[in-house]
Amino acid sequence: EAQVTQNPRYLITVTGKKLTVTCSQNMNHEYMSWYRQDPGLGLRQIYYSMNVEVTDKGDVPEGYKVSRKEKRNFPLILESPSPNQTSLYFCASSLVAQNEQFFGPGTRLTVL
Amino acid sequence: SQKIEQNSEALNIQEGKTATLTCNYTNYSPAYLQWYRQDPGRGPVFLLLIRENEKEKRKERLKVTFDTTLKQSLFHITASQPADSATYLCVFNTGGFKTIFGAGTRLFVKA
View 1 (cartoon, helix red, strand yellow):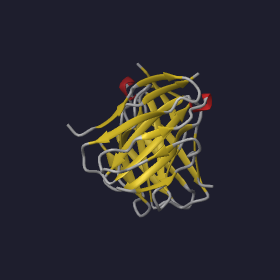
View 2 (cartoon, helix red, strand yellow; view 1 turned 180 degrees about the vertical axis):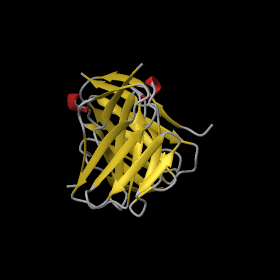
View 3 (cartoon, chains in turn orange, red; view 1 turned 90 degrees about the horizontal axis):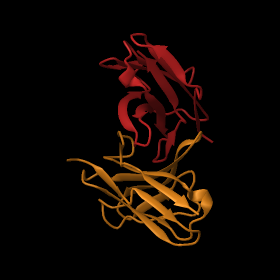
View 4 (cartoon, chains in turn green, blue; view 1 turned 90 degrees about the vertical axis):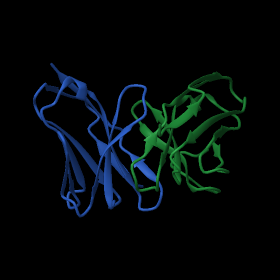
């Protein structure tokens, strides 16, 4: 089944404790992206990747890092999480940037 | 910066009626727009894509229009059903690789 998976689905952590949210797609897509969704603000793009080893900042990249060492994986790293990073996070992929995006199930992160 | 505006107020309609949602954009002229549906706590699901040279596009009960002069896209659901209740998102790419989402409009269809 073609899909985008994210792990963990739910995470509660404390300020400053490094964490990684994994994202994997099995559709051989070139484009992958991370979004955060907050009430009233909609989805905002954090980082995106056009292909392996090619990444760039979205609208809200501060406090996040990404890497794209393999085509299928695009992990999101929070080196020192803060409470303002409490949010619902979605990973997405598409064949190329301009195509329809397939979204993962989301990761609900709470930073205390 | 590029911006998408969708009606933040929820839209309440009666089953069987046509729902019309509006998407306005500023500071950019996208080559195409996409519409997605999102249910609470779930990831968005793609519905339709319309290009700037396509004035209208249809898929079953869905219709999208794209007016580049008004900088507006309209999304219509005809013969609406309670199962159509969800949040609908308007999206475009900035011509490069950055994706801009509108905040979405919540639709409630009453039986």
